[in-house]
Length: 144
Image (cartoon, rainbow, N blue to C red; front, side):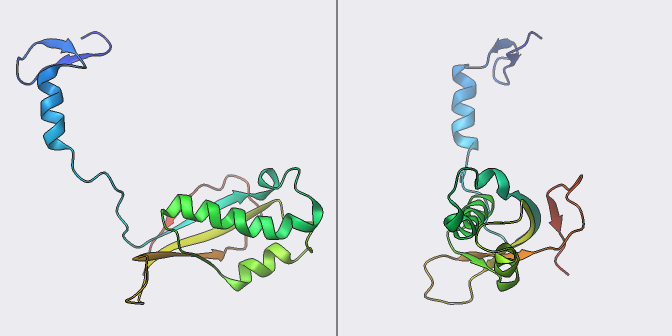
């Protein structure tokens, strides 16, 4: 079959991708659309150096914390992001100006125990100390 063409389940013949009969089949098949909010833990490397480029010295460490929050909210699809004190200490370890270039973090999406909370889940971001950032990938951590 040519690129961009498939066989139609209704007609059993080649057709363009925008076939009317297949559009109708797709409408019924699609459900939800939101990603699941199940608890999961992943390790990420955040490249802070590129996120803090051209940020004035006295605002670098606070901006780094905000950028980590933003990254976690996007990666874990939660608005509630909680940063561990050890990660905060690591970001501020060299002072307000000299933020570490990269940081390895463990992000855990967890269920909110508080009943009257707005969000069902929150993300806990923790520091993972590493010797080198070479060849590190995003990894899903098994919860035991």
